[in-house]
Length: 65
Length: 476
Image 1 (cartoon, rainbow over the protein chains, first blue to last red):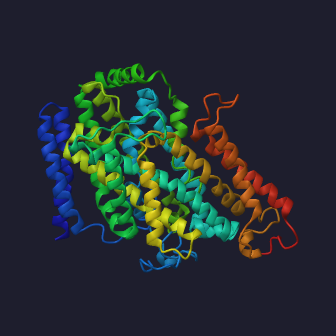
Image 2 (image 1 turned 60 degrees about the vertical axis):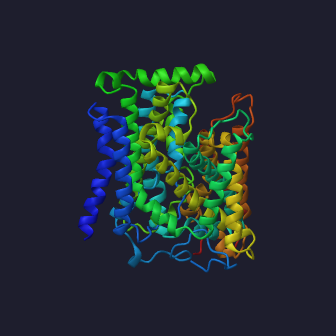
Image 3 (image 1 turned 30 degrees about the horizontal axis):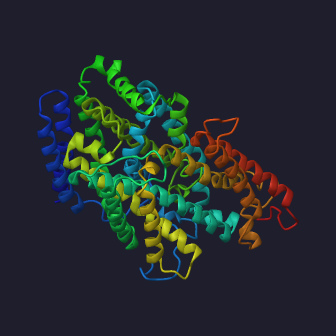
């Protein structure tokens, strides 16, 4: 189950990044990039919490700059 | 964690082993640290800092090489300054400092820390509000005066965003920390996508266009035609990249993390955070502004609008989450610091006070536009405490003095530490904020970090020698 969810998360990340590369190479329209990135984002935030983030890392309350 | 309504003050770090060395059974391998640091430095601040390099007039080659060198120096500092002490002592910064400086002085340090945290959180409120305002067509303007408000509707959004952040922070940091943990890989991917889309928007899609860098130079010319000429040279970039996390490495805040490290090799792990967050993400965020200038001649570094221009709603969501997940632990820890001063006040109330201060700071957009100066100031003020720990660890015993003096004398206020901290920091702040004949344009804040750190160490050592008495002998 976890493996399947991790694959879904990996696909979600690919949906966020690969369209921008296709736009860079001139093979995808910018509006399509934005739509697919949003789909990837929704999928990421649905799938990833199911396998990641239950245990807080030791730097969880640290300040980031 | 203690009860949410408890008036029992919590320590500033809320993990395990706060007042004892981390036992061998709790040590972590290097892989854990690489995983942690991978998401550690891709935060809301990156959306502000990247565009500020372009706005300040940094050339593309200086930026690429300067960030490379500066981040490398930062990694070396973590590895060779912080990690050896962390794995030898295995204590949090705060407990180690308490044993050297005394609990009273650590409270003072925490309050200073808390005030600085509020301003950092304020900048993140501004960042998130800039994104929330986009769907409503809210104007994001950076007034000339530092303490001038933006447009009325922007100020209202800041208040609403700040209130929500403060209430969530008052409930604790765990929930948001989980969101931050989950969002980190996605956020890094968003920064990368923003950079790639921005290059395409500027037609910088060939090797020759990328190597010529005309898209960057053109953007700088537009900025400078509107805002006047300015320069941000190679060494400024190097020193800024090296020392923007000065409080974490020179200031030893990350002792609290590396005390869990099984081996010193974990000290290399910040490299992944530096090169993803403070290299790729900064450059990507700067490219967002360059693309906006190319497309609309608009030089306003509005994080929400920049991300919207590249990735639409995904960009907006990213800016909001980045700002929120950065502001949340910042407000939470500022609340703990304030509670240390008023131990009978509930933590929830103190967190809401910290949130209110952060929201007030966030209402002044010019403050967040000065983030380059702020993080240098942050390192200048907090970094020197790391020099005290360094001197205590390496030199006290060697020169016949006692380590952890406050602990052994049972005092809550080590005067030598106070003077060694305040004198160099006061001088550094004076040079940063007041024009002098030596620095007519005022001192670039990041330049003050290392001199103040060295001066603090030297003063602490000299005062310890002068003030030592028979009880201050190396008998431990």
